[in-house]
Length: 146
Image (cartoon, rainbow, N blue to C red; front, side, top):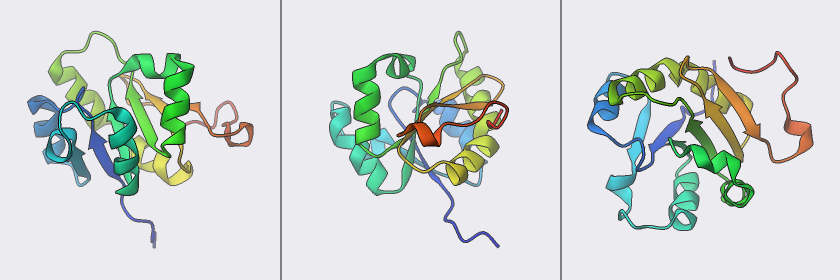
C-alpha cells in the first residue's frame, strides 16, 4: 500500500480557465487555484513558496520559464515542483484535454522526483525533466515518463 499523500496541483493564472477547471473536476486529484488563494498581482516570489508549503505542484503554461536561467533558479530556490505545459497553438479545450491526458504521468512523476524540479508537459501527455537540482538527479535516456 502506498502511504505517500496524493499530490495537490496548483493552477497558476495561465491555466486557471473555465474549460480547464471543468475538465479537471472529474479527476480524483486536488486542484488549488491562484484566484482562490492570491491576488492577481501577487509576485511569483511570494506565491511560489506558499504553494510549496501547501505541498502543491505548480501547473503553468508560461513556456518562457524554462528558457530563462534567472527564472529557473527562482523556481528551484522556491522549492517548488513545476510543470510547464509547452504545447503550442492549443485551444482552451485542447489545453484541458492535454492536462487530463498528462495527469497519470504527473502523479507518477511527483512520486519519483523530489522537489525542487521543473518539468515540461507535452501535448501527448508525456513529461520530461528540465532542471533537476543537481547532476545526480538527471534521468538516464529512456527512463523518462513519456
